[in-house]
Length: 389
Ligand code: NDP
Ligand code: MG
Image (cartoon, rainbow, N blue to C red; front, side, top):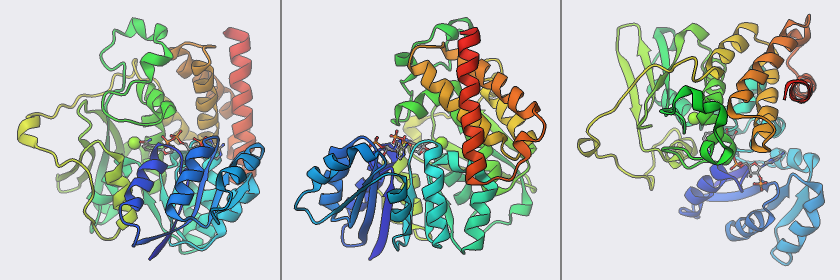
């Protein structure tokens, strides 16, 4: 029996993870499940899977959770301290699938226990990559990538020497507005941005796919996870979303990972690593698919990609600024305060401002400093919106 916990169990990645675990109950012993506002789902899954503990991030929902779990024998808890405590409960494998920078602290705590961390929460690597990797190394913990591109790179690198890698190419579908006329983008609505051509994901990451902020985060994630030079990381638009990443070696070989656009592949790979288990995903019929297309991303359509390069040039806490500003700008877009293209404009302004203030992003990467820069970045976005609209 493998002891597993899922942070962000009620979300899109969390539910896909539960789907895999629930198909094979004899292999997994569920320790903790965590969620936020979706108490009904959290309680139902905790009961169904016989979890030891269910935690909601929101202390105001503790009574609801207790009521939903009454008589089940599952412990209920709430708040940041309870999330941290859940991360210290002995487990062989922990899924980090909370959305946003809130996923960083529980992931670090899990690594401090030496646990294997399946990392979907890319924000952890973007805001505090060196801290995460050092913590894992210090405690002999392993991080397994869950983001589909990074799982693909990881698989393409199996048995290879990273020193022989010339380049890493991650693909992007191009999102909802791939083929829209550029001059219409400013008017794009939230509903239009929330439709992904290929993947079924949470709303925030779907909008981030349309703006390519998601890909920008993933470029930084690639740099932090695999330790490759930013100049060796490329982004390629691939509308079919079947090739997830390619690794180019110094002998000219390009190893591509092809798989269905179903997150259960990458989650299942991390869940079963180092073995490959049978997974309930489609088998691709390439003869029927016929062709795979690729093209270079247009920097004018996707300014977020250039912002990622700036972030990597600055290093340090610039990732925390970028992520915090991006999250706040996304909130403002969803709330109707700014337009679609306003997100990248504002993030660029805040990134410029905070990285040009002497020393600010060069402070050590600690949880406190990440939180401080995240806060400053969000404030910066609010000020910019108040000033310029
Ligand atoms: P969702 O929005 O679907 O789910 C987020 C999860 O986090 C939910 O369980 C939610 O609880 C919980 N949560 C929200 N806010 C907080 C908070 N402040 N503190 C603690 N828990 C919180 O997100 P996704 O599953 O789409 O994404 C999760 C992570 O995985 C993200 O980092 C994303 O970038 C990454 N990822 C997602 C992919 C996908 O296919 N969806 C693909 C690759 C990476 P509740 O819903 O109960 O409020
Ligand atoms: Mg991805």
